[in-house]
Image 1 (cartoon, rainbow, N blue to C red):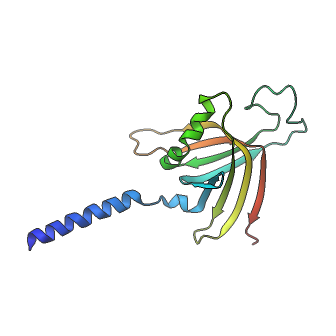
Image 2: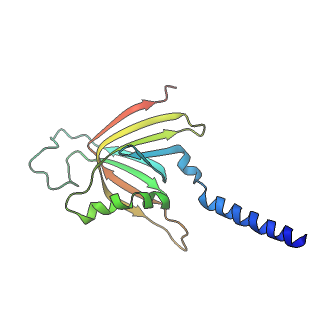
Image 3: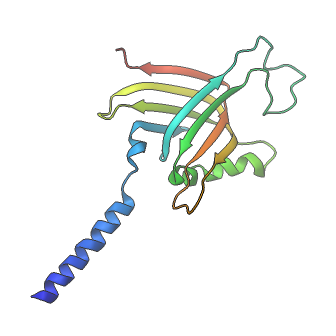
Length: 159
């Protein structure tokens, strides 16, 4: 009987460890990040910055993709899982002459699932990855910044 009980405890412990390893980071519940309509898990925060300039974005003096007189930046905070899911896209920004651009949608939800706001971005390309830490690390949270052409708020909670 003691062997059966010990075996049962061992099996339950292994099952619990496996379930906790596969659990979703609770910070991810508030953010859904869609790349070309496909959900990309691992986003835990965001910031949108832009400054409007009266100079045309098609100005012939434009130096390269990273320079525009009208900077439009979407920055998302991601977990290790988010970095993993965006790996190919981030790598494409430095592996080829022209970074791959995608359409992105960002949905922010309350804890009960109500949509607070939905943003849609066009021609989104990665520009920067920033992460920092000290001491022993078990996971990396990072900020990935993207340039975008247009941003539209397509949905917002009314109250």
